[in-house]
Image (cartoon, rainbow, N blue to C red; front, side):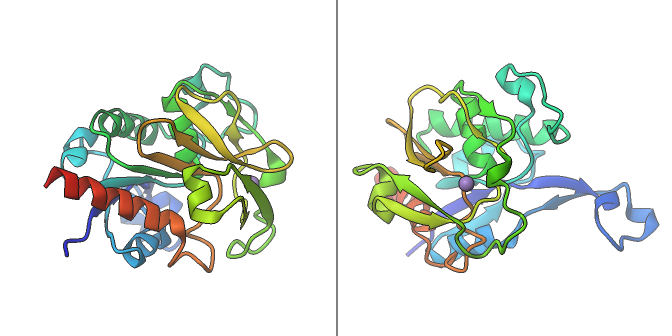
Length: 240
Ligand SMILES: [Mn+2]
């Protein structure tokens, strides 16, 4: 059986940001993809591919069966009409442009999209929502990233509820989250302090979480990667 083709977004660096590069190569650009996203997709039965930012995302959407918008730096606050807070990370304009355009094309084609961490934030901003720019209690870089650190409560009957039941234990490596929710989105997972931890679209195959399933020891076998591969497979079957 053909594996559904799942695109993974990443981030762009230069040689200056890598330790040990020869000086002659410091100005070269390189694309950076944390490997575990691909491992999660692969273990779930998908065929993962990385998506360079230079391509018009509409061309990828024509060929892909599903997309994972991965973690990374802050969405530049002006994208949602906010003044950047002092905690704002440097703008990654090229990536913001690419991922917002990816969602334009993906939504027009009803392509399945899984958002992880920054991916959730991009999906919310694309839908007209805004972000809390700094929630330091959830930026737990001081503990092991491969095990759970807090609970989330999940809505019964939601897509996340079908994957995990009504509660789940997660890691927490995000310093932002949803403030105002975007159009046609639902909050289906949250922390007891009110922090939004998972969202879904009311009609499109879009699911996003604030935690990092790919970093957990349970990455290979996590239901979220099963969800994107199943949704992508369903699209392939109906198209064929
Ligand atoms: Mn959290």
